[in-house]
Image (tube, rainbow, N blue to C red; front, side, top):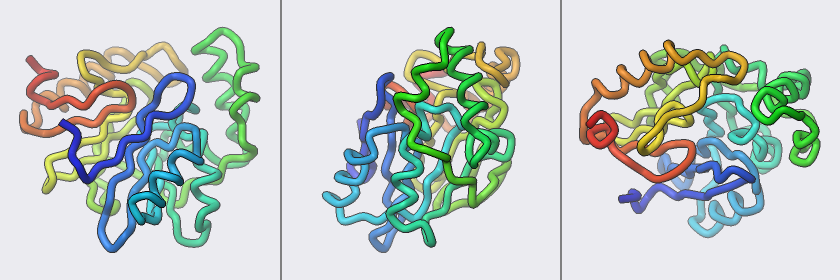
Amino acid sequence: MLNKNIIQVVVGPIATNCWIYPTGAGEAAIIDPGDDADEIIDALEKHSLVPKYILLTHGHFDHICAVPEIKRINPETIQIGIHDLDSKYLGSDSYEVHRQSIKAAMGISSILDLYWKGDLPPADILLEEGSLVGPFSVLHLPGHSQGSVAFWDKQAGVLFTGDTLFKDGYGRTDLPGGNEAVLFESLKRLCAMDPGINVFPGHGEVTTIELERS
């Protein structure tokens, strides 16, 4: 069941989950704003929230397309966090990185221009294993991409896994930086966690560690 305090906005052409996570004092972390910035902003306004963080589970385009528009809400105070190994997907030189990734995924790269909103801003926070950001501890879970991470609020028992772990599945490993053997090690790590943890994935339905390791 979806925690009533966590807001889900399904965005973009392949139904990416953007999660809005209240962090207190009317602020929120925006996890994986993949597209449809207007819908994300409308959800923030509906719940009287302002973004403090944009947190990215990895750098693939379907998880970061709306970053420029969300950042423009308040560029001086909103901080973008991504793992150092995926930081190449942000910044002024990232177009070519995304072009190569989309070509590997789809066989052509021209679709990128349909969604490109101009240069992506650089990261403000380079995450690594054990980083603390807002209420979250960062788990480095490579395999889907080199810099894939999960955001874990231990106190609340919630885990945002991006494309590492889905309900009844896991992310593909055939894109640049992907590695199936490495991903399986990351999945083993997740499955060893508390079975009661609620998992909020990058696509699809909410699940639990217990369900996914059974």
